[in-house]
Length: 426
Ligand code: CMC
Image (cartoon, rainbow, N blue to C red; front, side, top):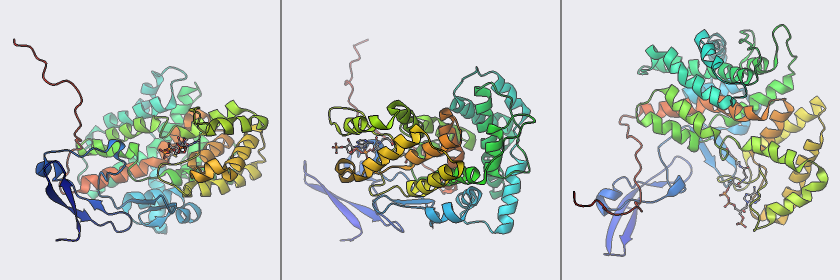
């Protein structure tokens, strides 16, 4: 018998079936069940894909037990500490880290492509004040396909590069515009003399003829947040992007779908919930009461920013952001009741038996929420920031799928639980 197989026996009729095991370069192997239905006349059932690999990918690797995250084989801590978001974006999009010349060219591409067609502004004018910036951003990205309708077919390496650079460069501009329009503020055009992350903060915070000073640590903190969000394997929004790619949809439509998925509270909205919860707790002397609520089985209350489906020892992204948060708070001299509440919760959770025994460590959202708050970025923009970081990952995943020799349209099956044929004679 081939050892690299799994044998399944159907106990209803004692028939056995063999399925091949495919090895990963690192991490769990998978059982190839693509012939399962044909052979057994049954589907497999795995709601939420908890045991299902939906694709082959060489982009990102996560080991949840060891708290390890790698993009293209590079550890996240190395990328966050020694490289910039643009290095990381280049790595995801092209497979290799850029050398100096490649990085300079990429950076110039980002600057030169950062402007959006003036027509986009007319579109944004139609949104009411206080429209959620994610609504404006997803419409903006979708609209880019109308402005670049001649470039929707991506067949060559050059076409891919142009599309990838265009989208990564324009997302921060659309993101900043979404904030300005949502708040009825005058828009600030990109400044070609600024780097990628600095330019975004500049478009977000400045006023015409009144440039707001940006500190190095602020740019570094936001750049690190972008890097840490740049990809995360087959999460919900990436799966949405891949599902669209499998239908042959163009990348603008796919990314717009990714933005929709990311908007959900259980995905990109968690860091906003962290700050809302800290504000609701309000003062240090109420922390014990909320810790007790979080531990109470009868109470649905959960401490936002704690726990993770995949990382069961620690979230490597949180470890990096914790240092950045400390540095940022120290340099900006930030102290507030909200920060004290956060510190107290963190201290209790890291020493309390309930949290330790369930591996409930602070996750990336706990620290990113606090950092974005310190950067004076409004809560509704937190998910938008996530989109900017995640865009290179989405494009890399879209492209990986498109490079496959044969593309299978994503088309899961179901366990039907509705009525059988009820059609009357007619
Ligand atoms: N506060 C209090 N108790 C918790 C929490 C929490 N935040 N998270 C999990 N638990 C408890 C849960 O009640 C359960 O207890 P018991 O074993 O006694 O029944 C145990 O821990 C395991 O919980 P689970 O729901 O089975 O764990 P999960 O892996 O399905 O959920 C999670 C992971 C992230 C959805 C969950 O921890 C949670 O809701 N956290 C708060 C929301 C949050 O911070 N989300 C952001 C996650 S990071 C996003 C990203 O990577 O992009």
